[in-house]
Length: 378
Image (cartoon, rainbow, N blue to C red):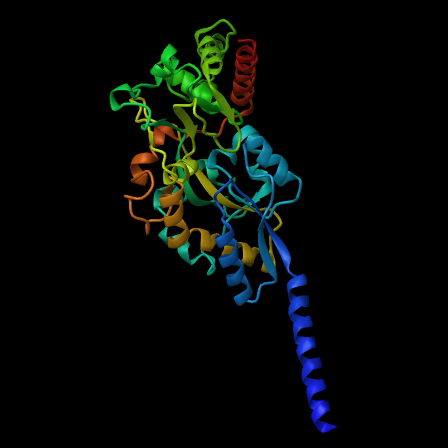
């Protein structure tokens, strides 16, 4: 009888233990992540969730769908109160009257849970377009972002099908008949295509932003004319494009040049392709993607978010994004030879996409909408 009692007790204790483990898992609160495709892998989630569990946090990092596509879409998702952590592109933060910045909270860069912060490239940590408004008490601004990784809106050419001597040297060559229907463009972030058209005219890719800041209203009106050089240049760029993409580019037998942020290129090359970035004489428009905490995070959930962020700015993940996503890592612990190369070379100040204001954005949206309609007609 005593023997049977001991067996029963053991079974009951074991059952209660399993029940408690199950209960523990069931009580975990999601830590909801809005990210670009390819940024947070299943392996990353497994590792960071194990880290949270080991530290006793009842939170589980999970990536929400859809993936990030652009400034307006990310703003809408964050505003819908379904996000805890985002991977915003830096200039999105203060675009359109700083609407997104109002939904973010400052980063405590001295948090003991952000031990990898000290390894970030110093020139990337306090960029004006990612800083909060000065506090009424301290009159100091704080970063609304943690630098994560960046790169260029680049154009990659299929060197398996295009000889070295035929690779374009200037942005202007994209308008040549030989490339008609042979290149792709991003559809969801139209300001890059406006920038491309400006570069094709020998001007700054961010001319609208610069004119607005300078208050040159007459020049703005002239530049945005429906019969002006810019609109005609843009119309032809859109008409001649062989494909438009939103979240990530597509690859097919007809495209010889693919526009991309970079992450998809390594994947294709690993599968046997040979896509190489075109080094245009005019340079590249560059971007920095960041980690942000949505306003309202506090207590243990904020601590869990910091642990998540710290893991993603650690050497392992930073090396992966440089090696596998063709990006420039934000950490000084990653060798320059990985990814696109030296961050100080890539992140050229005068080619950093600025935080467009309402006026600039609405002008560009109207012009690219017109170019889209024109491309459909043709």
